Length: 250
Image (cartoon, rainbow, N blue to C red):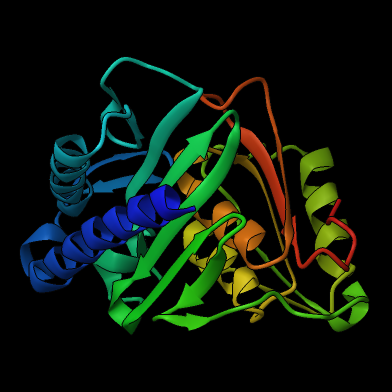
C-alpha cells in the first residue's frame, strides 16, 4: 500500500506541474497545430506531454503510453503509465473549463491508480484502488442512485465513433434511459465526476486507454465499477463505469 501511495504522489506531482504549465501558457499553447476530421491537435498537447514524459521517466521504471507520442520506453502491457497530457484540447483552446491532465498506472489490464487534474477549475481528483479516492485531499465516494431514470449519465461522442444509422440509434436509446445526460468534452473529467458522485454512470465507445485510464482508476477507487472492452488496450475501447448500483449503460 505504501508503494502505491508513493506512486500516486508522483503522478499527482507531475499532473500538477503539467496543469500549472498549461494554465500559465494558454495564450501560446492553445494554438491549433493540426486537424484531421474531428480530431484537433494544439501546441499544448505536445508541450505538456514532453513535460510529463520527462518527469515520469526520471522517477519511475515503467514505460509510458501517451496520446501524442505513443510508447516512451519498451512497450509492456503488464505495467505502464497511460497519459493524456491534455484531455479536452478544444475546450482548452476555446476557454471552456472542462479539460484536464490525466495520468494513470495500468497493471495487468486494469487501471490501478489515477490523477485527473482539472486545472482550470482548481480541482484535482486522485485515487488508488484498494486505498481510497480524494478530491483536493478530501475523501470522495460514488453516488447511491439506483435507478437510471433518476440518475445522471456522463457520455460523449468521440472522434472515432461510427456515424451510421444503427450506431446513432444505439446512442439515442442510451441517452433516453437516463434522467439527465451531460457531455463535458473530456472523458477524464466525466469519469472523475462519477467517482465524486456528481454523476452516476459513464459510457463512451471507441475511446483510447489514455483517455479513460485515470478516470476508471478513480471510479474503482471510489467504490464504483468499470468495464473496458476491446481487442487489446492499445486499440479503441468501449468504456462504461457506474456507481456499482445502477446497471451499466448499454
